[in-house]
Image (cartoon, rainbow, N blue to C red; front, side, top):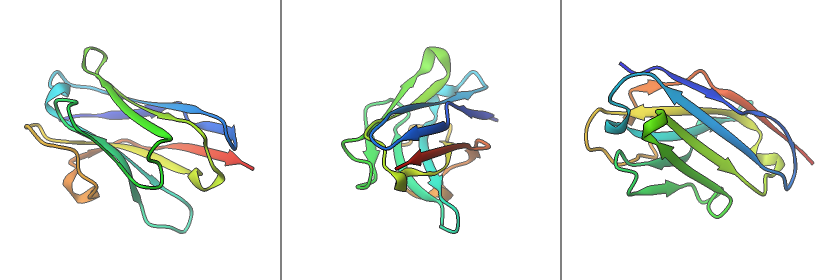
Length: 126
C-alpha cells in the first residue's frame, strides 16, 4: 500500500517555474514506477510524464517535452516535477501516481497505475 501526497502547486506567471513534489509512504518506494498526470477543467485527465522504477527511463508528453523534468529521490521517498517555461495551458490539477511494486516502466495510461495522490492545483496566468 502506498499513499501519495502532492505539494508545490500554486500560481505562476507565464514563462515562470514551479516544482511539484509527491511524497510517498511505505518502505518499497523504489519498487514503483511513478507518473504525473493533469486534469484541466472540463477536460480528460492527461499524461504528463513518468519515470521507471529504476529511474533509468523517463517519458514525456509532447506538450511538456523540453520544459518539464521528472526526477525521483528514493532516499526521501519523493518524486519531483520541475516545470519551466510555464504556459497558461499548463493550468490544471496535477496528480502523481504509483505503479507497482515491480520492475515496471513508466506508462502514459492512467489505468496502469495503482495509487493516486489527491492532486495539487497549478494555475498559470498570462
